[in-house]
Image 1 (tube, rainbow, N blue to C red):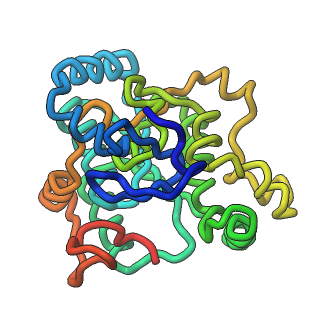
Image 2 (cartoon, rainbow, N blue to C red; image 1 turned 60 degrees about the vertical axis):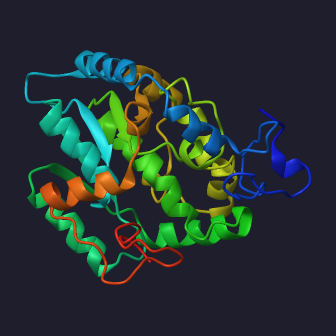
Length: 283
């Protein structure tokens, strides 16, 4: 694919009009962004082969002693609910679901999370130091341009800490936004990534800078720091996205979550689109 487009002139994807200002996006000779290239490739991809890859991965981590064998970060929305539902009911896994509470939740999001938990899932809600999150959000806005950077850090760090605390070696996030919507193509053919990738891509290289600029103590930063390298090496965590193994379909996810996990959509459309079943968990 072409060079990282953000370094050159501003342009738009010839197929979907996504701008080259999107971080890490690349274009091919036709002017198609890598999200559109991936959409095209999915039509002929051997999804049965990837299904077998998933089954091998699950069998390697499956436990038959009642212990949790995988972890699913979730907000009570359609995607985490869909992943957890499939792991538990289709594949017979025992997932632990984890929510890191954002600074400004919405009533509908709170309602959907309760409905999800009550539909039959083991769940932990983590509420990091609210003042620490406020300071990190401000620091992230100043240093990185992200007004919710503190929460963004915690949905990675607190999840990793929970996995190590419960000795869970496999973590499933929902879709790979870099592949599905444009960005890094590193995980197109390799579903497994690590903490280094999280820092580089999802936290955009600003993790240490924002934590340092915050002036917060080690105790305040507990849920905002990754475990040290020794702890990570001890647990050999595998992080992956469900969308690598199955053709990602947000509307299908919504229907399954609505039927089996009590998900309710908003009365009005989400801002900027015609759908009403996404991004209803926080302001």
